[in-house]
Image (cartoon, rainbow, N blue to C red):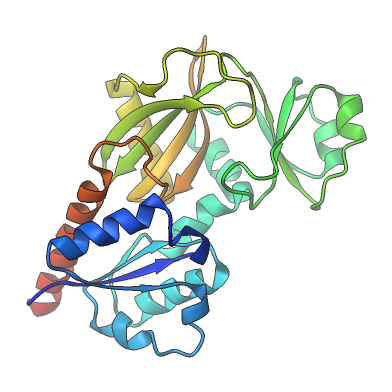
Length: 271
């Protein structure tokens, strides 16, 4: 009997490389896959699939889908990853607090309103981020306190980090259940002059750092945005279920990982 996988995905992600590639790979391997977005979980009819499935996989940040993911878990479904874990990196205030208490190396960061950031001892320039922003939306770099004081910020709070542009390239660590891939990509906010883009050398310290971040937030499928400095690697943020762009065989690896977890859950239920 084929494994039954329920995928919850934000409508904006349905046409993207992931989870589209993962879904295609799962179906090629004989799995029954049903996909729902936030427009399809209001009437409760999806719950039949949640009860019958072997695993729920979510690339979801929409509140309706996170609620559905939590409900699926309450119905007895195994989920990858949990709504709680996704929320812990979606809310950058929670992420900032977790970093501060974990010892993960990060740029100096303040979460608060403009007045609180102005009253801090952060060194300029700063990168200011929305608390719930993603895909680099809403990022602003300010070069001085005077510039920050005149900034019209659309939310009550921001996440402000000390910013070092370097060569305009970010180091991204992509993780699929502990397996780490390192990739250098152009920064979304500063001109890239680096000639070392693409696959990056993977060292034991990078693997340990990525896995440490995953354990901190309880994630299996995630990416870690890093900054390479003269003093070492610093973590900018963690993202749940990224697109895995430039990760070799990502769709196959995701599908294999999902099927392993689904089979384990089916065996546990049958035992």
